[in-house]
Image 1 (cartoon, helix red, strand yellow):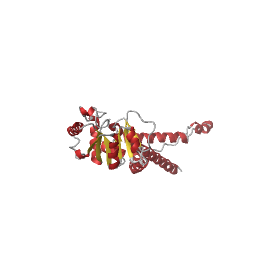
Image 2 (spheres, helix red, strand yellow):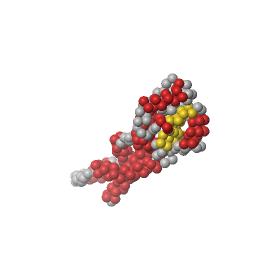
Image 3 (tube, rainbow, N blue to C red):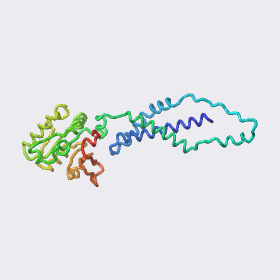
Image 4 (cartoon, rainbow, N blue to C red):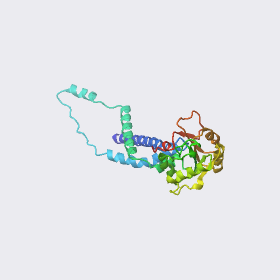
Length: 273
């Protein structure tokens, strides 16, 4: 009977560990897309066996049998009252204690697991292979075409993320400009920041137009898996045609389409800040 009870407790412990692990993996790779939960479940099951065995092995050891106490023969009343003095934990207390132990093990494991930026980029983009992105307010410090007439500055905090995206995706950058000089300033700023030296992005994939409608036309013609923009009107117009969109805005919009995500910045979306 004791052996069967131990097996049942072990089985319950493994189930709880697997459940916690699945949730943790889902949170780690969460993206608010339909397949994120399945990714967490598969990843949780993939490592549950190894780490459950490892944890159980480290916490299991030879248990000593405690010698049975012999009741004093001089007092019959002590023999009858002694069993009532033993406190047996209830099933709920045991279950709560096991849950806490399992959660501590999972938390300790995930403290040592830190995904790389490349892994985060691939998970966040759902393995998307083509990305279009506007420049103003996302890649550049400037937020209006008028500012580009005097200067163009690449945001240093977004550079690492942009270069990582170009390793896995076909990236097109685009912007509305007022004159040819603004185009040259943008290209020079991107080149000086090293955007073209990584091999993932070339100057021919930096597109310019004179209207916001022109940028929308670029996106529809390219048919990307993801489009990144700051203009809510452009986001709204493209929601029916693009699989996923990322709206860069300091204020979270109240209503968005199911395939539109939002973030204050590109680097915050990928958790690089």
